[in-house]
Amino acid sequence: MPSTTVRNLLVRGMLAGLLAGVLAFAFAFLVGEPSVDDSIALESAASAPQHVHGGDTAAAPAAPAAEEEEELVSRSMQSTFGLATGVLVYGVALGGIAAMVYCFALGRIGRFSPKVTAALVAAAAFTTVYLVPFLKYPATPPAVGNPDTIGKRTTLFFLMILLSVLLAVAAVILGRRLAPRLGNWNASVVAGLAFVAAVTLAFVLLPGNGDAIKETFPAALLWKFRLATLGLQAVLWTSFALLFGHFAERLLAPRPATVTPPATAVPAA
Image (tube, rainbow, N blue to C red; front, side, top):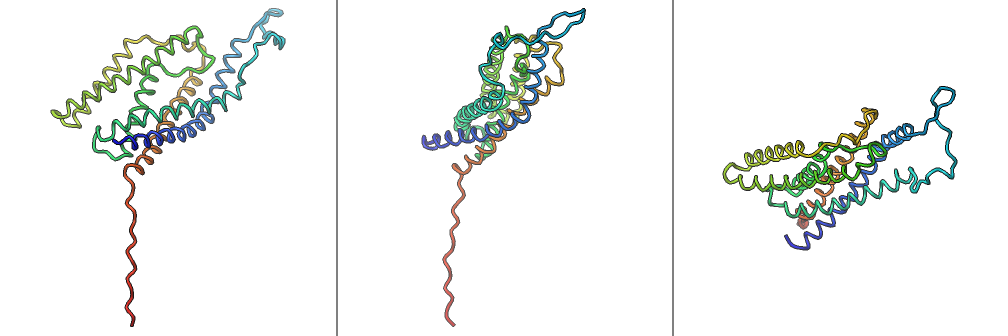
């Protein structure tokens, strides 16, 4: 593939990631932020100081403002500008990476159109980069869980992403090597089953994440938050697949120009 085409696809991938990030931000703000606010409010209420007065337990009076820890970034700023910045940067970065993967995959995974190839790349990226790690280490609401294990939990999550991507690459290589003997369809099925088996083994061998959520945290709120985070990624990658597929189709397979036939002169009567 010419370098000019690669550069053009990279630019279109980053643009598609940016536009997909706008849609993902809207979803996160409307669907995800309410559960985040509920989680923070619940944790704040649970950690409020208590004192005993007259045999009854009651909340202690608010500490003087001078003794309160000053909030560096307000919650409203986090849920608007901070959220938008994070999602948009995330979308642009993943869009660029996915575009590079697309350049490598185009023509190597079958005789698919640019749009279908974009959809396959986006589906593979969503599955390996987010869905598989999410199934092992699902998202945790902020201000919930043991803060001493944040580093360990983050390391395990990124380790699961690395394993998922490497296993997916190995499955693709396996499928390509089996294709001459088994055919494309059978080789793809065998490679897919091998990927599932390897991921299942990784799930069993890697340590769990039992201390991420307190037992008293409401299960309904927990699953509301986790479904919102899953939906955010689904919106991001689905939007990217549709937008980038459209951009790539216009670049790689432009419609032929319509030639208007010359007008036929009408003979004089």
